[in-house]
Amino acid sequence: MFVVELEKVSKHFGDFTAVHEATFSLEKGGILSLLGPSGCGKTTTLRMIAGFEEPSAGEIRIGGAAMSGKRPYERNVGLLFQDYALFPHMSVEQNIAYGLKRRNFDRARISQRVNEMLDLVKLHGFETRRPAQLSGGQQQRVALARALATNPEVVLLDEPLSALDAKLRQELRIELKQILSAVEATTIIVTHDQEEAMSLGDRLVVMSDGRIVQEGSPTEVYKNPRSKFVAEFIGRSNWLQGKLGQADSAGLCLFEADSGLSIQVLNPDFVASKYEVCIRPERIRVNADHHSADASVFVNRLRGTARHIAHLGADIHIVVELESGELCTVSEQFTGQSLDQYDGTIECTFFPSDCIVVAAGT
Amino acid sequence: MLQRYIDNFGAWAVIGTILITIVFLIAPILVSILMSFDARSYLGRFPPTEFSLQWYARFFSDTYYLTGLRTSLIIAVIAASVSTVAGVCAAIVLDRYEFPGKQALETVFLSPLVIPAVVIGFSLLLFFALLGVFQGYPRLLAGHIIITFPYTVRTTLAGLTGIRKNLTEAAMTLGANERQAFWDVTFPLARTGMVAGAVFAFAFSMDDVAVSLFLTSPDTYTLPVAMVSMMRTNFDLTIAAASVILMLFTIGLIIVLDVVVGLERVIGGGVYRS
Image 1 (cartoon, each protein chain N blue to C red):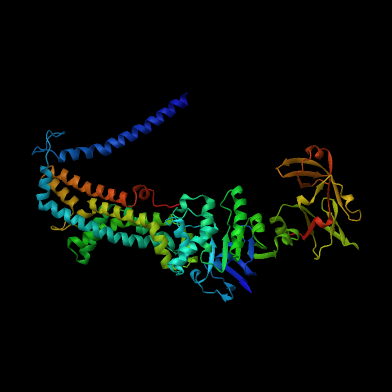
Image 2 (spheres, rainbow over the protein chains, first blue to last red):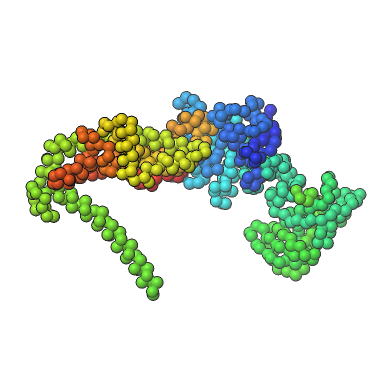
């Protein structure tokens, strides 16, 4: 039983197609991240689910009921706005109680529910404060409590953490996830931030130019992006463009980059005239002895010189100029090693299975 | 070094300008306040040698002034109320809806600010003559509503633009329909702007001479018009007393405004941040 279903939902604004035949569904308690760059149609999709925009075509169902023609207040959807949209003239308590009042809960039930929500977001003692007297993180929790108070069938979060600074963001991400699972809220998160999308969501829907380009678990999408767009949008990547040779019996192909560099990759399950290969920086090892693990496994070896080394804390980023001339970013974990070992000629190694092959121009 | 001199000179120039402005703003008013308490029965030299309330007594026993004050108050109350309601409606339409000619409509609404009051007064006089309306009240009311309307539109609009649209949307996802969202969220937040508009409207209506001069009838005239015509016929310090009384109404109103909504918020334009 799906709580939210979108079936070929499109939205046009004049000649402009904001969303094209978006189809996805979400079961009860699921958390889905709608990820994409700004202008990809994710916000329009969210606004259609909330009822602020009417789809030009297709159907949205919430709890099995078609939503067409239903105004926002005729749906039971909780929405956490990017800038929280707290009512500045109401106290924390009044903000949380507002939805309950408008949904005609009786007085006793309202105060009970407000208390539950204050418990949930740990804001006891702040009941009478105005939003302006709260920190950004606290405002967000009030907004979340307000959105969850009426027990909405689906909770929509619009860029929930983007208004906060980096450190607070990490803390609140964990807290947000805990709160959402505590109330078993069916949730759709709209974001352009891959970390936010991957850490909060158990399903990822990637959008580009109004279309859904890939869907799957965060790990699945990260490991097997089906287009250059998805691979680039999620995670950092090194790119090579070139031609693919015949596959051998082990399923390996020789990939010849335009620069003359060649590596072994896994045979892709599609055919294209030109291919591009993406290697994640963290999949490349520097000066590692890959032979010891299993001699039968083929390892790509590329020689080069470190051009730039940045120690970022837990990670070391090394920009390597390969002998073929390409620049390649490598990310090594810092385990106490000396940075001296990156001097002189170094060897970059990675497995064919670490190479993501996509059709060029996707 | 030179830069330092220039900076210093600039700072003194600013301070000097402020001082001069203050002197020219306050001094004439102080003179007329002091003169209104002059005990001499003729228009003597400043400063007064003795003080009394004789000019105030004369003001309150002169039916000519009293009629003017009464008319002014009635007109100001009605004009401010009407133009506040109309201004709020106009501002809401301008703020919440998109339609062709919106810009033009806004310009029309605010045009009385640019058109000289004398032109408005004269045009209205001709227009009402055409319609066959010669009574003072309807003519004055129409004139005053027209000149105060832009202020109520402006202040309400300033209040409304400070309210982010997503507050209304938030209310709607929480179960409020459009009407409830307006009364629960938009109205309370824009109220400061509306009150400010009403106060400005009242003050401008009380104060107006240029438009009113054309629209009075022999038995319906406002206090400022009465003062102007008294100045021509028998100039004495009752006019100073009348000025002080007129001023007291405005100051009283500002104090009320400050107590009720806070002056800073009104002058700040009613922009809210959460």
